[in-house]
Each structure stands twice: as structure tokens, then as C-alpha cells.
Length: 201
Image 1 (cartoon, rainbow, N blue to C red):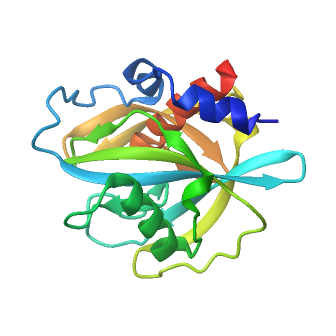
Image 2: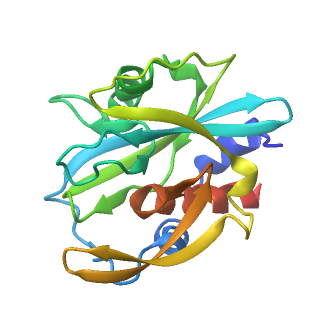
């Protein structure tokens, strides 16, 4: 079980950052040190209590011609003009999967993550959803939504590695396997840091 008060306190302290993200970083992934020219975006890790377990909703993005077509992701997207990162994460969550989050249930941010392939700088936040969710997906952006059991984050049977083909060649990619889905790339790196934080508390 997660102690929500302890998690909120931990998120206000120095975070594990790149060291924890890198555990799920694909081999050869470009490392970005300068964030100034990246497009700001935000995502939300939403904790949902299911009996004695906690889960988080993940989405399968719609299959289109964009950089992250069909990938598994956290709900979120780019910031609108004059919009803050937290505002964007809350708005995008409601637009994509129909969950209306309350500001009082946001626990805090984790470390931002640059995504070189799409030139984004993603700011993740952690929140709690009180009650049972009723998903209403925007099919233009989301193919489906499913819940990831947080107990699997630090389960060795869930962590795997495989070679994946890209336009520039093959790359060794670490990933989480759950519900028949492969969770890799930026989403896996974000969850890697979150799992390190959970392990600490």
C-alpha cells in the first residue's frame, strides 16, 4: 500500500531525476542537456485505489502518422498558450480519458523529461483520483485506456528488454510488459523514476 501523505511529502523533496529515469532508457537514446528550445508538455500519473492495490491509467495512443502513434502513454499533451504545466496535465486528462481531477488531490511533480524525437519537454505530475473512474475517451487521440498495477513497477517479471527496429536501425530497449502491452520510451522512463520514489517510502 502507498502512504499518500508520505508520497506527497517525498515529492516536495529533491527527486531521483535522470539517474532513475535512465534505468528504462533505450540504449543509444540522445541525451538532451539544454531544455530551452523544447516544446513544453505535461502528463499525469493518476493513482486509483482498487481494493488493496493502486493502479494508474495508461492510454494507447491512436494510430496516426505522428511520432508517438500507437504507443502506450500517460494522459497529457502540450501546453496551450499562457497555460501552466499543471493546468495542461489536468485539462488533457479530462479531454483524453474523461477524468476530472481536483487540484487538491494533486500530490506534486516529478522530474521533467526531454523527448528528442518529438522535441518535447514533458513535466509529469502525480495525483489521486477519489472514487471509481468512469472513462470517456477521445477517440481522435486515444485508442483505449487500461490500468497498470503499481505492484508491477518493481517486479522483475514485468521488466524486460528487446531489440526494436527504427528508421535509423535497431536499438536495445528496456520496457515494462503488462496486460499484453509494451510500455517503453518516455513513459517507461517516467514510471521508472516514480517507482524509485515509491520504493523509498
